[in-house]
Image (cartoon, rainbow, N blue to C red; front, top):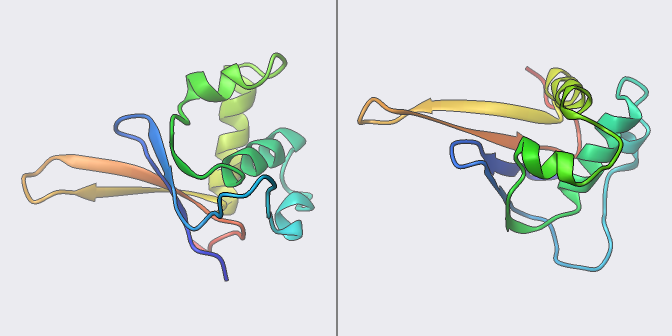
Length: 112
């Protein structure tokens, strides 16, 4: 239904694709109402899905967006999003033997 949103972890930047540049967010209700996610995880998911284009989505950036959640709370929320399939970490070995990784974000949980 919705395409993936991609975060490249190597440089701690994020490339968001298939998100319209409009002054409002369109996020699946199912994601916002998923009882398996904490409110922190839902907020991070909504924040990520509401942004388009290239932007820094590393831990420092996420921490700077809230005066309340610290690194442990944010990491716990990211782990929830990963465990449930809203956030998928992809690792790929290039032809030159080096590894690269990126994160794909989804409006709906992906099956593992």
